[in-house]
Amino acid sequence: MTVHTSTRLSDGRELIYFDSSPETAQRRQSAPADTRGLPARPGNGTARYDALTGEWIAVAAHRQSRTHLPPADQCPLCPSSPSRASEIPAEDYEVVVFENRFPSFGPDLGQLPADPAWGTTAPAYGRCEVVAFDSAHEGSFGSLSPARARTVVDAWAQRTAALSAMDGIRQVFCFENRGADIGVTLLHPHGQIYAYPFIPPRSAVMAQQAAAFYEASDRRQTLVGAALDAERTSGDRMILEGKHFSAFVPFAARWPLEVHLVPHRQVADLAELRDDERDDLTAVYLDLLARVDGLYSTPTPYIAAWQQAPLDARFRPASRLHLQLTSPRRAEDKLKFLAGSEAAMGAFINDTIPEQVAANLRAAVPAAPGKVLS
Image (cartoon, rainbow, N blue to C red; front, side):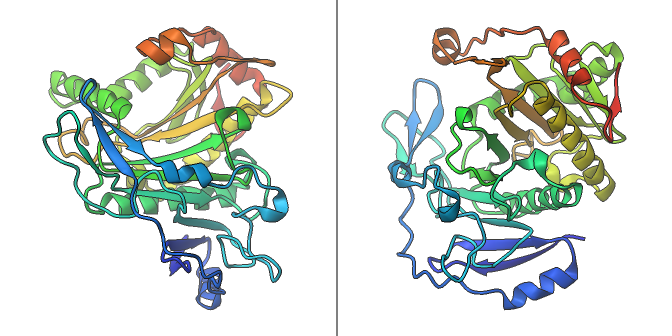
C-alpha cells in the first residue's frame, strides 16, 4: 500500500513523499523541513500561438540557468545531509515528486485563450513535476527493485489523477528521459510529469485518429486495442506478454528502436489501473527495459513516454493508455538524428526493420516475469 505525504519547500513548491508502507509514511510527519531560504519563485513563462500550425509554443528562457550534469556531491535529487541541503530535505526516501524549480509550464494555472490568432500570447499555465525514482544517485527505472518500481507506478497514477483535476489542464504526460544522448541534465534516476494547458500536437493527432476509429466501429473497439489484437495475432513484432500488459514493436515504427507497452483492458490513463494491473505493469516493464539494455554492451538512451488520454470528454472513451518507448540508437555506435525529412517535414524514415528489432529484443535476455515469445 503506497501512502503519499505532502509538504512544502522553502519557496512554496509542493513536495510529496511516496512510501510503500504506512509505518514509513508515519515517520514523514517528523521529516526535516527545507531550511534553504530559497528566493521567491519566478512567474510563468509565455505561451505563443503559432498560427501557421495551430500549435502553442512555450517560451521558458529561465530554464537556461537550470542545473546541468552536476557531480554526485552536488546532485539536487540526492537526499539532504547535515553538510548539504538538496531539493529533498529528508536524509533518505523511497520515491519523491516535487514541483520543478525550472518549469516549462506554471506555476500558475489558468485557461489559454479559446480563439487565438497570429500574435496571441498568454502565460504558460500548467505544472511541471520531477519524479525522483530512488534515493540512490545512479540508475534509471530499469535498475529499480520491483518493489520500488511499483511505488513509482503508484506515484504516476496518483499524480495523474491530481493534476487532471487542476484548473485548465488538458493533458497529463509522465515520461523518463534516459542518457546524455537524449539530453538528460541530471544523472540521478528520475522522470518528469508535464500537465499541459493544451493538447500537445502528437497527442492531438492520435486522439483524432482514435476518435474516428472508435466512431467507425460503433464505439465497440479502440484503435490501440485493435493494434494490440492484430500484433498478438500476427506475433511477428511481439516481444512479451504478461497477464494484463503486452509489449511489441509497432508495425510502422518511426524510430530505430521503438516499443509499445499496452494494457489488455481499456483504460484512459494510469490512474484507472487496478492494483493487479499495476503489479503486472511493473513486472513486464522491468522485463522490457532489461531487454533494451541487453541489446548492446552499453546502456541504451531512450525516451519512455506514457500516452494518456486527453482530458477532453470526447477523446477519453476512444483513447487507450500505452507506453511508447523510443531510442535513436540504430547500432552499437550509431545514433539516428532527426534531419531534413523528419525535423522539417515530420516524415520519418526508419533505419531498422521492426520485425528484426522485435526478434532481437525477444532474444536479448532470458525470460523474466512476462511470457517471452519465440
